[in-house]
Image 1 (cartoon, rainbow, N blue to C red):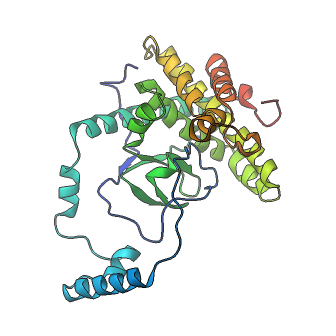
Image 2: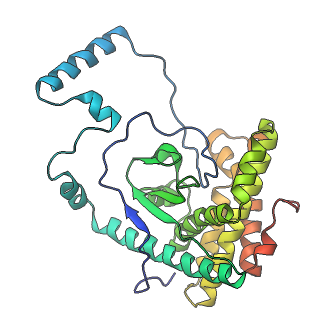
Length: 306
């Protein structure tokens, strides 16, 4: 993708310098949360008596040093002098280029959706994109890197851990800058759904559904976001920004994160009733439908077979 030298969005919030958030991390479905790749987690019991005694001792040691760990855990403790500067200095050139890439792709989505909304007599409210490391507190609760990129309708922000693109390439075999751009465009697609009033209706409907029905509704929501990402892809191609192999990169990414592919990779078999994002074929089909048509009307996953 030809992205260098193009406009970068001013709607990127760099929160990589923030410390750990308190109150627990990750877990659970966030309303309208988009691209979530399960990475597995261990299960353990409660704390042993020995562990509790050890933690109490540690607490009083830090207390004697003038550090209240309870405030640190709750996120209320002031950061040490120079924290922001040292954290920023720890970023590497590769991360800075990734930030520039993300900002550029976000700017391209802004141009696409501003134009589409204007053509339909509407105003597009541009989302913020938050870059973070390891963990973050969003309007939809706390999240960790394990959550994957996600969109929070409560604060209308897209959240992206800087390390995710490496995981996308190395763990999920979906390399290439347009594969990464597809991820961003998919999450922005959820923002479009939110602005169009689709996400609120979906979330309200899911509250009255069984788990199986709710999963099916989630699949249709995710496939529509894929289709919206395809629309953005078409407009990007029309600008002459795509290079040979870019479309294939996006389609491969959609394939690698299909529910069936992920389940086969992680557990060796699939459980269709648990799908909540769509199969590899469904995801590529709907991305391609948006890419080929460039029209919102082609992305009605709720009234058409998926």
